[in-house]
Image 1 (cartoon, rainbow, N blue to C red):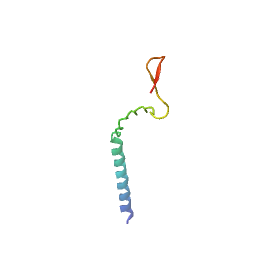
Image 2: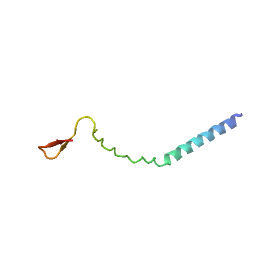
Image 3: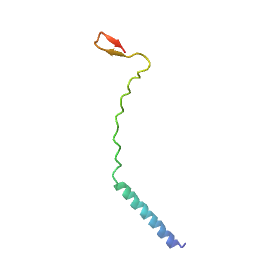
Image 4: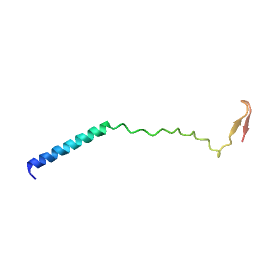
Length: 62
């Protein structure tokens, strides 16, 4: 390969790289997926008995 063709290939590669960089810069930022709100963890029904408050003074065990 002669030095001239080598130089031309290098220049061509640089031009392609610059154009690719410009195209990437012009692209809009990728849209972020909508954030899903995590469902609040429900208390495990197993384990200790749950108290259902009927009035502030009385609590009923389920």
